[in-house]
Length: 106
Image (cartoon, helix red, strand yellow):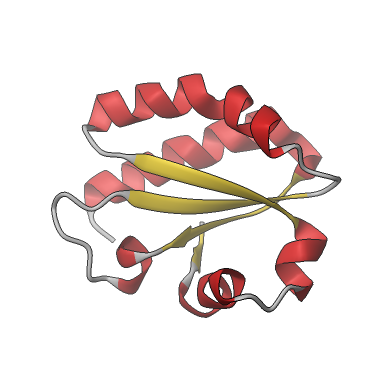
């Protein structure tokens, strides 16, 4: 993992731990950055696994300002998806299967 990516993920993790406290189950880097085949213009894909029912629109609204600032600071697109812990553990759709197989917990 290169230094810029490491800094971004450290800042993101710190923010999410402060925001969600005990609701935060796991943060997973997935996609090209996790596979190691990212290009210089690749985005950073992150899955945020939370306890309790997740209101996706509310979570996006809650994190959008921070994520925008992070993107501007590092000149890279950081995209976050949110999922309930139970769903992530038990659903076998392609997306979740790929994240479980290729993802890197941060």
